[in-house]
Length: 136
Image (cartoon, rainbow, N blue to C red; front, side, top):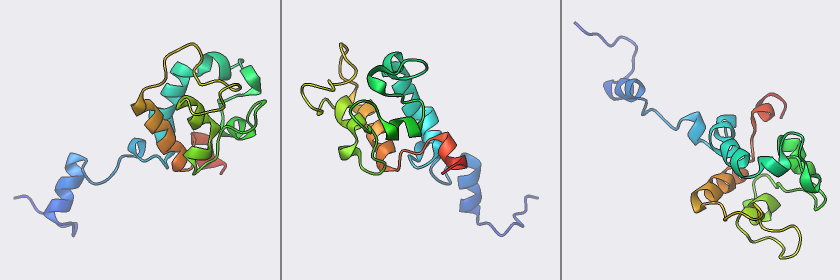
């Protein structure tokens, strides 16, 4: 005989068993996992060649939140909580200054609307990265 002695209702137990009990961390833009699973792959695919690792074109290093907040020659690229004021988002939307810096990524097609939405959602949620959880 199956007994439910935990005080949880049957529906709650089914939600837990089926993984339907809430938003997964990688789907919550305010969690570090969102950056790791959704944003970082976009940046690595489209921005790493010029702005990650040893490459800091324009003085910009996007490997860390501190690097994005510091920015490059044109200042910060990140305004946590405000995607419309974040140069990073404006440039990938191709809404940045027409002369310099240029729309990103240069000499490539614009990022997909879905990828832009993911980056914008991350910025709106505070642009949390894994190290932020340890050292806010």
